[in-house]
Image 1: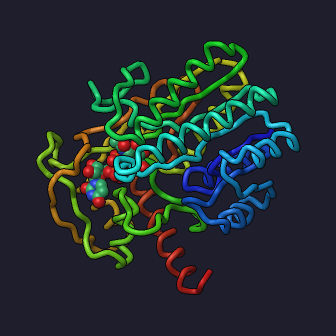
Image 2: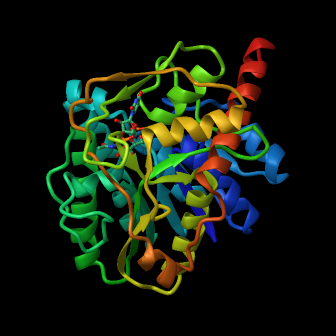
Image 3: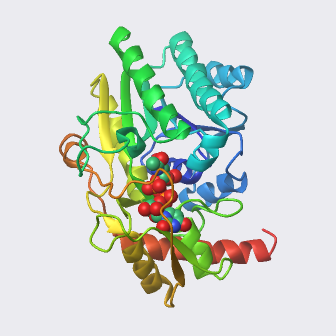
Length: 340
Ligand code: UD1
């Protein structure tokens, strides 16, 4: 089975490409390097000892995209490529809507033209907006998201649901990720955003390696056990495995299906800092700050559906993820110092 992975050199994409190659899938990657590096391709090959085609281009570049479909019979698409910074999306709504929606349209057009029937979409827990209950279930209402980024996920889910209705032979999985963290055991793949990170774990990682002074904890007056925000942090290698399981599900021709991918367990910001201290072996300085606009108190998944229908379970704990994330950060800093 040949799978086109958009954004396959990014954080979740690269770990998924590893999982796909390890499970015997043929992979074609398209990535414009907006938030990734070309060297990731070599690192994936180093881990898997397998080769795969990589096209460095934007998904919206229809000439390059069509070339892929002409040259290779694509059986399935996993669509990761997209802008994903929540804060930035508030100041650049047009860019976010245009990029995330147009790339999806380009893929849907190719599917129609070249007869590809299987599609896996990188969605997010953000589609639950301000949740009516926690844990969140797939049947819970998809409400207005709290940012244009989130709204692109809501809109694309809606578009794919409509597309599935008129194409009964299409199989589409909407995977709602909770908070992906961690890195590959090898220290070769992980998350290393440019500039000051927005998300908690990349930020803690930079404090742990001395590049940033202290973690700002956004609010300690939430209605949670220690007052700080609670999230469902899932190891990226477990999340990657979820994509392989979703592809296997699509082979059974289920039509449209939706799965939460998380651990089902919540961890607070302070607990996360403590896990990271255990992982790196020293204290992580932090200060309590004001709440961050748009944040919710608690978000974690009910994952029964993914467990029952996909056989999805997590192999790694939050502490494992902190250890692997720290290992990657240290290795990445070494590589940068050596100019690699
Ligand atoms: C956000 C997005 C989610 C996306 C995820 C990863 C929303 C509502 N959420 O999740 O869709 O998948 O990023 O890209 O769109 N925190 C601090 N200090 C920091 C950073 C964060 O205390 O420096 C706290 C936050 O207040 C929150 C928790 O840590 O309680 C996690 O924040 P973050 O890592 O940014 O992820 P989310 O906002 O949950």
